[in-house]
Every structure is written in structure tokens, then in C-alpha cells.
Amino acid sequence: MPMKCLKVVFSIPAAIQNPPVSSYSCLRRFEFTVFIAGCIIWSKRKESSFMNKAYLRNAWKQEEEAAHIHGWDFSHIHDRYEEENDLPWDYEEIVRQYLHRDLDLLDYDTGGGEFLLSLDHPYSRTAATEGYPPNVKLCREKLLPLGIHFRECHDPSKVPFEDGSFDLVINRHGDFDAKELFRLLRQNGLFITEQVGGDNDRDLVEMVLPKTEKPFPHLNLTEQRKYFEDAGFEIVRAEEAYRPIKFYDVGAFVWFAHIIEWEFPNFSVDQCFEQLLNMQKMIDKDGRIEGTIHRYLIVAKK
Image (tube, rainbow, N blue to C red):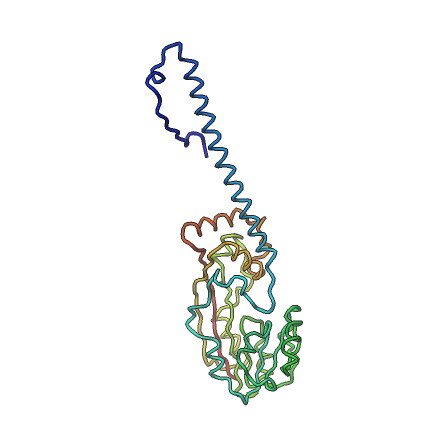
């Protein structure tokens, strides 16, 4: 804070306000004392600001170090952020609408199998794939002992199952290949997917990493719908939505940005510290940081 912004008010005796010549040195000492007091106040405020920044940096770096997940589990920031709570569709409800117990089901890119297991489909009619090594290990530990047909898969164009193996294939926020899905499905089989669009979190990315290119600009309903139709599918349902995502503390955002690393390339607390301080100011003022998610839904029939 500049010295001119400090205003120290004293009640000065009349004798000092209009000093005789003999009191001149006393007045100078008084002015010097006021000056020193102002310097101390300014110094303390600067020290407090520095200590606050050091505290925030340390807290955010702890979130950075904790940014690891098993499967697709965001419980670390539960109640510290919100997203996907107001989409115009319910993915689980749509899947359950088409899922009957006598159907053969594949969950492609299952993550840690959390959503798949919540469906409670007969294990003998359930299959899953996953390619991310930590999740592959988790799926082998969780799914195989149940009798679920789990296969490791890194290439969506080469899924290790026979032609026409499934009545229903589901995929949420994972990769896929439309022609390969067409091969895997039986006649009249369905593929149901909810996907993250190419404009996802772009306003948040701009806050910390300005001018970062979109990693997947082709991921939008118009292009993806044509992609499925070209592969031979009939589109049963297609929707797209933009909705808010809210963070209630900067640490939650730091954790999130490290987990979604493909959207926030080269993000770190040290590199983006000043931008994170600006985010902190937003929270101090408005109680949250707000961005925009991009989602689209497709139900396609063979």
C-alpha cells in the first residue's frame, strides 16, 4: 500500500499546533514518530499479505499432490463443487429404460466399473473394457471375481469381442469408434452414450491458461450425429446441453484441473499462481468460481 494512502489521525495539543520556536525540535520528533508508525503499519500489512499468499500456495500445492483417483471417483471434492446436476436428461434413467435382464450388455471404457455395478445387471450377461492402467488393475480386482467378462482394451477400433456379441453397448465420457460399435452390436442393438463436448470448461481454461487450444474440437452433436449415420446407425435420440460448473474453493479447482489434465495441459500451482489468486478474489466476492460444461447425448440403433 503506498504511504500516501495511510491516514493517521491524532489529537494534537494547541501548543504543538502553533509551536513557539523553542518547540520546533519537539514538533519534528513528533512528525518523525508519526512517520515511523505509518511505516510499521504498512510493513505489517505487506507481511500479512505475503503470509496469506504463502498459506494459499501451500494449501493449493497440497491439493495438487492429492490429485489422484481410483476409477472415476470425485469424492475428494464432494460438496466443494457442482456439475451435471441440471442436465435435461438422466443418463442412468435412459440406460435403464432400454436395459432388460435378458440382454447382453457391454460397458465400453467402464472406468472403475462404478456405474456398471450400480445397474445390477446379471453378471453372466455383463461385459466391460478399460484401457487406463490404474483402472484396468481395479477392474480386474472388482469385476472379474463377480463373473463379469472384463477385457483390457486400448484401441476403440479393435475391441476384443466377437461380431454381434451385444444387444446394448453403453459408454459415458469414454472413447469409441462408431464402425466398431456397429460390428459389436446385434441387429436392432443400441448404443447409448453421454459425452463431454469440445467446448467443455473452456471459460475455466481461459482463466488459468489463456489461448490454450481445444483438445477435441470435433466433439459436438452435429459432427458426431453424422459420424454415426455414416457408420450405418439410425439416430433414436440426440441432445446437447451447456450447463454451469461451480467451484466453492480454489483448492477444489486445482485438484479438478490436474485430474482433467487433457483440458488443462501443463497446469500447475506455481505456473498459474497469479491466475489462481484472481480466482480467490472471485470466491471472496461471489462465493464461487463458475464455468460452463458441454455435454451431448446419443442413442443410436443398428
